[in-house]
Length: 291
Image (cartoon, rainbow, N blue to C red):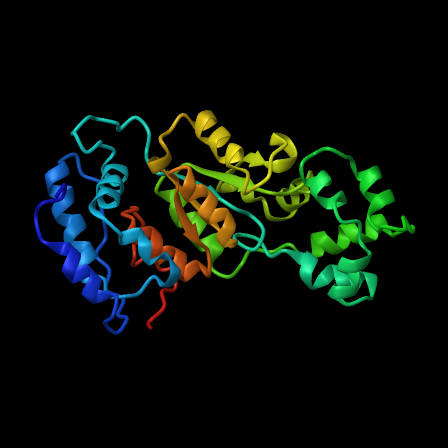
């Protein structure tokens, strides 16, 4: 066993069926991998919460070893890799970090229910726009199948008005940024990501590195994930990808990236701590769940 200090697997499995109690012990980087292993075991043993559909993040000792390597900046064989703080974090944007106005605000803008909007809009034009294959003029012309005229500037203003950080997300991004984690957007979104940036200034926390409109690929295309790994020059196990859509998370796992299904900022904080990220659990800006 790589960690080798305690037979933790049975205890961890038992903890999944215990009443959820949040009891965190901060994980601090150490130049001593053995000391870090002890801290890591101790921290895991003190956690008794269930991580819902992300419980597989504590699946086996290989993943523990990967998490340990990421937290310490050392590989499992002791090689020094301190020149870059790992893991690298890849975040979906819409409905993971930022509210997506499409599902509520846009039907109201067109004064029709969502079912009718989905029936009348062009079936592929938004995907083409997301991949950067068409410009705004083409989107405006073909938004509806019958090419009826639309108030395009009004639609854009509707989207801008609806963009906002999801609850607790900006606080989590601040905590990650303060710990010097490298964070990138990994999103299916058109050039309108610039409108999100203009309103929320999200580049304070991450880089808009991987957007479908710039890369010409969309999740869950495996090549999009592989392209990101090549660009970042990191191993898949040194990346954590977060998305609200399970199919995109599963696609990340297929290429070896650690995938987390986003449900809320609080639960994401728990999952990241469980993976060994150095985020202070007593950070006053973060509100942890008590059950």
